[in-house]
Length: 136
Image 1: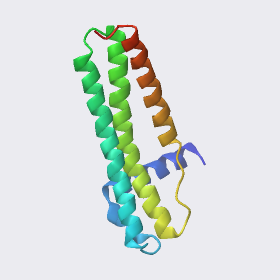
Image 2: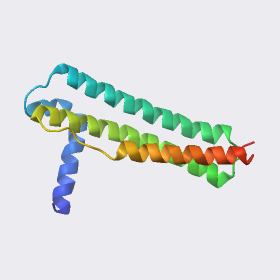
Image 3: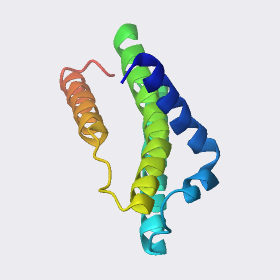
């Protein structure tokens, strides 16, 4: 796929975020239980994104004695992670809905694993800093 083709495909995918009724133009309507489960998953990812954003604000506000660069780094990682989670939620919802309507396998994603690894590493770093007394 060329760069132009990839950009067109990405643009089409983003347009579907804002016009979800266009997804209905493809394939056949799946069992509503599957669509509702897809929507619940979407909402769970949004809650995760909001929690990460809240965590970013908490790090910034409640760890003032943490070295400035570390505090800002942790804050930015959490805020960006929350934003990515929200974007990924809507993208995954559209991809799954289209796959169900087309009778295809649901799309796989590395995002949950990458997010879990990033959050785990960040948590481990905070634990080390707490044990070293660097967060007082």
